[in-house]
Image (tube, rainbow, N blue to C red; front, side, top):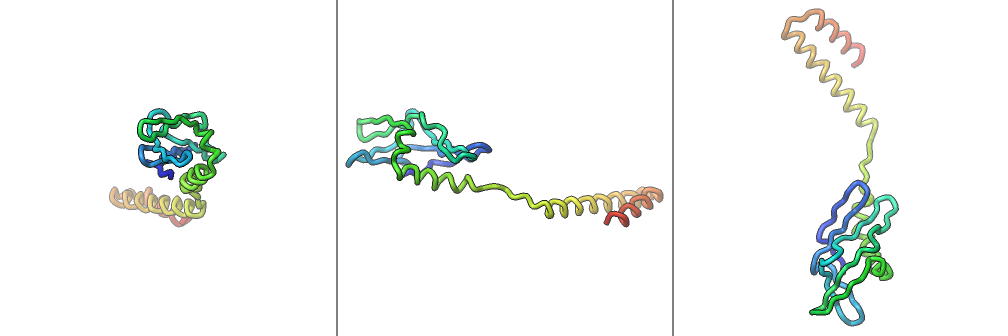
Length: 142
């Protein structure tokens, strides 16, 4: 059973933060609970989708007995890899798509609103040459 305490998604990696009682593992017939004594996270690279901190040591405890195991050794357990990928996949596929047409429309609308605001200012100041110039700009571009 692997549940992240929380997941921190950064630009280059996903950090799956582990905490006591959120991660347990079976060794033989015994169930060991993760104890945050040494390693406390699993780091997945966004580009390669691979775990990068494979040499980190995680500690598991059952009663007074403690076991130290590297993440590399945990990778040999198929359930571990499956759980890590299912957690990380929710964050790895998040890419913001940029719709250039939408951006162009937004910029066009902002420019038009700015021209209208400048025309209003010219009217308030009774600036006839400014008003004429801005009105002709508005006619040409919008």
